[in-house]
Image (cartoon, rainbow, N blue to C red):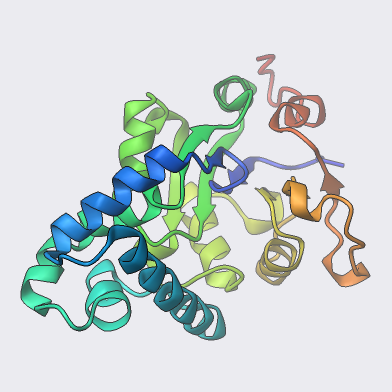
Length: 246
């Protein structure tokens, strides 16, 4: 099935990292947000309003397949009533804390072993992910000593477009120096990730569905080439290439 695949791209959320909704962690982030923004409103109430506004933003982003820069996210969508110059300066940190208010993100089981294993087997690795933060993912890769393994990282927050726009996948392949037909993508969303990779001409699409979607029926047009339940299964499907044994 994987004949000719030279590059493997992975999603971040629900793929390389899993969200843990730990309330003490989330509450600390909410308190940090109100402190940064400069309001005396109740943190839980204020962040509930941010969540409501964020849902409106996400609808716009999905409708237009566009990701707004962090400064625009806060000055236009999430906190337009606050002084825009100050909010713009705080946008990176506000985005980081807003994401922490959703929960703590931890590496998926077997994440490092899969990344290092695929790399040692001769595959070019990359990341393609919809994410509103510009710095959190590069910082995380650096902190975990994973930067060296990823030749191509395309984030919607810096690229400006969102999956399933095919340009996300095509740009990732260009940066990796690999033809799309020789690329595989591992994501978590049947409709979004299958649609995008097919339009971009990727040779293979693999879905690792989250718990909420595992038992849902999948329409034929959204069926991937492979469904896995854990990252470690990738090692069984991608043996060494060009003499690499792993």
